[in-house]
Length: 75
Ligand SMILES: [Zn+2]
Image (tube, rainbow, N blue to C red; front, side, top):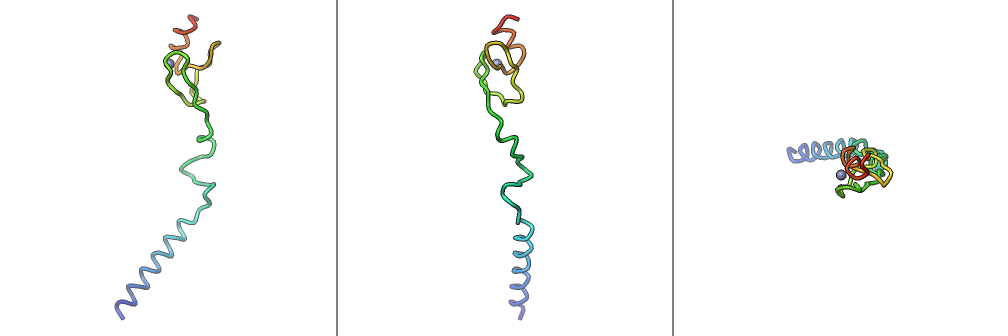
């Protein structure tokens, strides 16, 4: 009888766990879809790859920071 109660508790726990984890794979709140699609841009001065929204744009391409744009373009 005791074994049956333990089995029921384990089954209830598994059921609750599966119910809580039932999330659509496309709507994972930990990873917004817009962030993964950002292109990586290579700095024309030092070669470091920076995310698309952090790129400093210059006449000869993208840079990791304003200092490198200034060094490369002299402006
Ligand atoms: Zn750089």
